[in-house]
Every structure is written in C-alpha cells, then in structure tokens.
Image 1 (cartoon, one colour):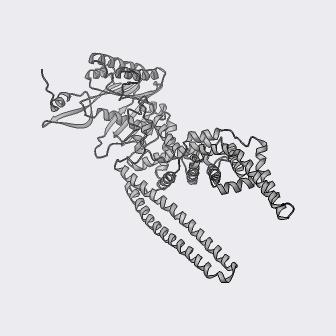
Image 2 (cartoon, helix red, strand yellow):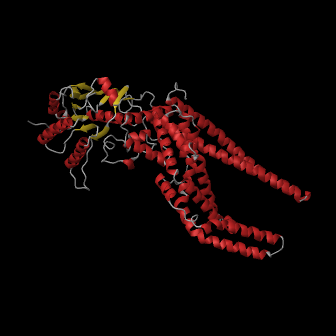
Image 3 (cartoon, helix red, strand yellow):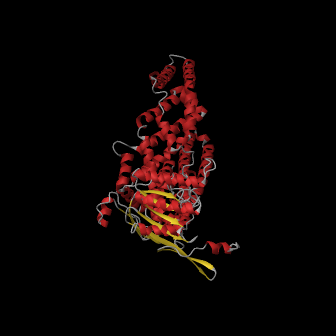
Length: 618
C-alpha cells in the first residue's frame, strides 16, 4: 500500500525531483563511461604497439583483454542510456500529472477520433474530444488499453455485481502508485510503429506457409547436415574444398527461393510487431504484483495461470522476430542461409510459435488492454482522493430500502454535493439529486446561463462514472444502475438531408423504442423539440413526458417552458419541479447556480437582448 497521507501533488513533485536528480547523476556517469571507453581504446592501442617485440601471444592477450573490457563498458553505457530515457520519461509524466491536477489535460490523447454524434450519451456529455472525460482520465500507454478504456466509457455496466468488481480493482490500483507509474512509463518508452490489436489478432489467425510442407520442415536440417559433412570431408582431405564451396553456394541459392514470401511477411508485420517486447514487459510487471481484487486476480490468471506464461511466450516471439532482422545484414544473411538455410528455419520457428499460442494471443492482448485501462482509472481515482466510490444497489436492495415490494424494476439515484469532474474545484457549485421512484421525472426550469445544462451534464457524467466502476465527484452517491440515454446536443445533418427537428425526433423515437422493448433507462433531455414552433413544442413536450411516464421511464428534463411544471400536479410524487434562478442586481445578472425546489420566476432573455443593444418595443 502507498502512503495515503501525502497529496497527489506532493507525490508527483517528489517523484519529479527524484527523477531529475537521478537524471543528472546518470548523465554524469554516461560522460565518465564514454571518456573511460575512449581512454581504454587508446591505452589498448598503445599497449599493443609497445608489446610488439614481446611476441604475438602477448599482443593477442592485450587485444583480447582490451576488447573484453571495452565491450563491458559499451554494455554499461547502453544500460545507462536506457536508464536516462526512463528517467526523462518519468520526469515528463510527473510534469503532465502536476498540470492535470490543475485541470490542464492537453498532454493526453483526447480521443477526438472516437466522437459519435449518434451515440446514446457520449457526444452530449463530452466523453471524447478536447477537454473531455476521456482526456482527463486517459493514461493508457498501449493501443489495446486505449481501446478498452474507450469501450468501457462507451458501454457502461448495468449490473451491480459487475460494477462492484470493477470498483474493487480501481480502488486497489488507486493505492499502487509506483506500479501504475512504472507500467505507463514502460509502455510510453516504445518508439517503434506499433501494430494495433486488430493487426496482431489478424497475424495470429493467418495460416502457416512453410511448416505445413513436410519437405520444407526438413530442409534446414538437410542443409546443415550437408554443410557439416562437406566441412568434415574437406578437413580430412577426402574431398577438395571447392566441392564443399559448390555445395554451400547451392544451398545459398536454394534459400533464395523463399526470400520473397519471407520478405513480404516481414514488411507487413516485422516492424509493427516490435511492440511485442513492450507487451511482454508490461505483462511481466502486472504478473509480479500481489493483487487481491477479483478482477485483478482474474487478470493475473489470464497472464500466467493454467499453463499460460504470457510474458515469457510473448518475449520469445519478440526475440524470434528480432532475430529475423539479421537478414538485413547481407554478410550475415549469406553466411547463415548458405550454412543452415537459417532464414527459412527462423521463419518456421515463428510459425511454430503461432501454432502453439495463436489461440491464447487474443486473451493476452485483452489482458494488456484491461490492465492498461484499469491503471488509467486507478490514476484518476488517485488524483481525486476526495471522490468517493458510490454505493451500488440492485432491485432487492431498493425494494428493501423503500418498502415497495410491488415494483418489478425499481429505480434509485440519490447524491449529495454533485459536481462536474472537469470543472475546477474553486468554481464548481455543487447540487443534490434524488429520485427513488419508478417512473419519475425531474423538470428543471430556469433562466438562460443559470446552470440548467451544466447540471444535466453533471448528473450524466457522474452517473456514467458510477456505472463504469469509478469514484464520483460528489460527497456521497447511491444508485441502482440503468442504461443512460441523453438528448442534449442534437445536430442537423447536411449529408443525410436531415433537418434538426427530424434528427431530434429520430433520437426520441429510439428512446421510446428502447422503453417499449423493456429496457431500463435513465433519460436526460435538454429543451426538447427545439426545432418546431412554440405551440407544437409545448403540446409535443407534454405528450412526450406523459408517454415516458406510461412506459415507466426515469429522467431529467430541462426546459424554458413553465407549462411543463403543471405535470407535477398530474403525477404527484413522481414528477417534481426544480429551478435555477437568476437575479438582476445593480444592472447586472447574478447567478447562484444553486438548484431550488419549484418553478423558475425570473427569465433573462429580454434583459440580455437589451444589454446587447437590441431594442425591445411594445
């Protein structure tokens, strides 16, 4: 467990100082090692020149000793450079996290390519894109991890037990700061072009090209045996060396028959599969941790349980792929191919690996993605120590709490001090939320800019966080999960020749169809039917809410239409009115952003128009 008395800012600042101090120390060692290599090289040359008269044995001993020491220094130099790169990345990560604590997420991938205006809630709630929820929590360092985190935010869970399992994992990782940092830095250090997980899965699904031919499987052994026999016969003088040379040249020529297909495979996958070495290290890191939550234990079982040895297996594949790169050295290519038919042999070793592990590779990639995404969620929880995990309820829990044993599919959402996680704490005004009946709706009225839309997004984002297994921006929260659906930001479509009004109707129809299919929804709507005249809008809105009530729906609707507030009298206890008021003080608008019971009384459109110089005439 990590020390929980320090704030995240203290921890990141301390880590940054250690990384910068370590970096300066490593840079000094790199300089000294480089200087020592140069001096050793010069001393070895000088010693060889001075020892020429001592005989070739002495010269050889000096050369061998000098070369061995030089190679040791090269190895040390490479390790120091690797350490330098790690510390540089660690310092960069710490600076990013310190900026993120000040709500600057610009260093992180925002997932703008994942935006979908047709999604049930993601587009409305700014889940993806600049300054989005995804950007604020995205600390993934792998393609599978990014994909998994996006999938979890796009398709939240609806079962209490599933959410609680995720909560346990996130809560455990929240206190594993050192592991999370090392995991992310290790993944970020990879500089090659990585294949995404679809490409890796596609490669694993391809058939073996060479191993399915029995003759080809035997060919490398036959070539090796022929060369060994030729060498032995030449050394014993039984055949001339030229005959062995001809045999070797024939073997080299034979190996060219397979070069085209092997080159095609290497061009398509060789560079992309460089990420495998990183994946092996990440899996080994995850496997080395003592994890107790059910979700993380299942992850470890996928990595190394029941005969699985994912880190070693993937590291082996990485070595085989790197070994195939020897063919890019023309001298080594000729020597190895002519002697062992090495290129074909190495390729068939890769195919043998694929035949053994291809069915497990997708599971390992999923494990990498889940570990990466969970670490990102753990970092989000760590960076917000004041965010509690919500209490999850199922139908039986709600029926017991409310004493209502007749409702087949109850709804429950109660939160105190809800705030938006992307708003700075000093500017965020918090409000409550309570809805414990099915069906039920809250109708929110209020002036322009008073806080209605922000409140809707605040409720929606925290509901999503809760159903994803994350802590929430609230003092406390209890909920019975349901499927989140919103209509806050409907847009027209020029490409589909679709008006704004028709686009909104399609979205509302999709919601009604879900309800008719028996889906349990939590609906958030902002100023519905904006694309039509006021009379139609009013009649349509009243009819829509009545239909929602008949279909046992739950949700929140923000509107300027005060007539919708009369529905509370028709559905007592099931529809409630709340409002955000604006007051004009000393010629300026004043907003409290506090939600109050009842209907709004003060509207500000005319005031704002006059402030903009638009004359209001009778």
